[in-house]
Image 1: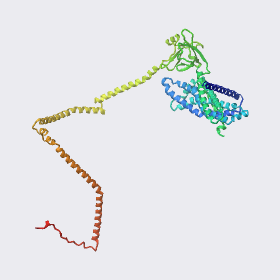
Image 2: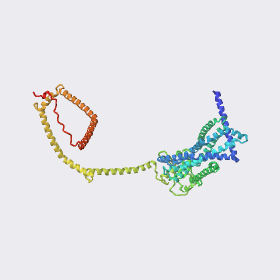
Image 3: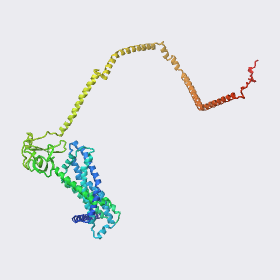
Image 4: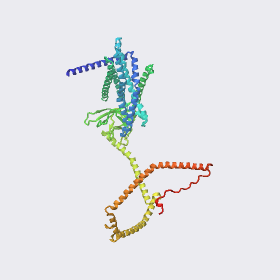
Length: 258
Length: 346
């Protein structure tokens, strides 16, 4: 038992360092990609289109619904305790600081994380990755980096849109139920919003983007022999992304409040 | 090629551009709204405790945010007082006069609070930056407030607000009580018959009915007396042992004799009823039979009627026939050949 435990631990340590090595390789290639205008720019643009633009609809619906619910509940409940002004703090805390980046990241995991893992898994299975290597193209530079950058940029932008829809568009939805003046609402919102809120939200988006794309590409390229491994690596990519995402969220929030 | 793929660069560009413009616009609006670019005047103040005070807390003047808390530190002195650093925005610096006071207010319900700034009533230039603004926790600040040297608005705490809210309700209740009183008075006068309304008329009529009730009662009393006299007479008859009623009700009287006959009368009556029942049953059967034979009888009657009609036609035909016009010859009455022996004469 001790032997098997030791083997398991050894395997985990090796896998961890392998993943770290992959991550730093991606980071190095990303810096190189940014420095030199690469042919992978086209892949990057397509990735932004698929990950960012196409996810805008669901992001908008989610943000408007969440914002509207918070405003309606807040406007009806908080003034009863003489704390009507707290609605703005709650809105910013929930939408900008916490749920904005997190929900956007979940959408990206569901849409693009799975797609990237499946696509790279299929390419690995059909030996396309080996073909790139054989003609001297670094698959990380050409396949992984544009996807990492695309997902990260898309998540950052989607988070901005999420905030716009959640804080501003939701106001117009609530006008069917409440009568808060727009100028008063907007002024109070700007009064309550701080740069650290925006900074925290954007930092989270970037970190979440890097996590989702790195894990998805890692598991996509991790496929070994059979096409039946594709759904397995997709599930692993999603599960690990969610876990690491939540840990990172907690870590960043702790730093924010320290 | 799909539109989206064909114009992928443009669509992605617009997507990025709108987001960047939005974030830039929000940052600019935040800056304008939060006076990022205006000069800030920094001051300090001391409090007994930092409870309820936090960095970023607003300094309020009659509901307006005029500044914010920048830092809090615990002083190393015997009283362990707390020093706060705060700033006042340029737009409101003229409100800061020497001997102004800061007060930490807390909601009685424990929800929130704030730092209230009370400017001095005596005009003067703003104190130099870094100087102390007295808090109500300090002796100087307390004295200034007590001497009413600072401009303080009338306090409207939550309890006062609740009492203010209750006041209109109490006024409404008072009005309702007055209205109820008036209503009761109206009802009273209606019952007294002082009004010309329907209730007043009813009450007048009730009064006249009540007065005539005495006469009715006297009449009823007289009739009851007559009835009582009759009852007395009847009682007397009953007490007479030779009276008709006594005889009838006597255990050896006629009724008792009829009733005490070993059920002979009852048996007779039962027999009659049984016979009657049997008769009714037969009658019922007969009626049923009649009911079932009614269609047949109707058919026979119908056939008879048709036969009669035809016979009538035949007779008419015969009477109209020229060959038979002379009628039918009379048939001679034949005497009976058979006679009974009883018809013979002896």
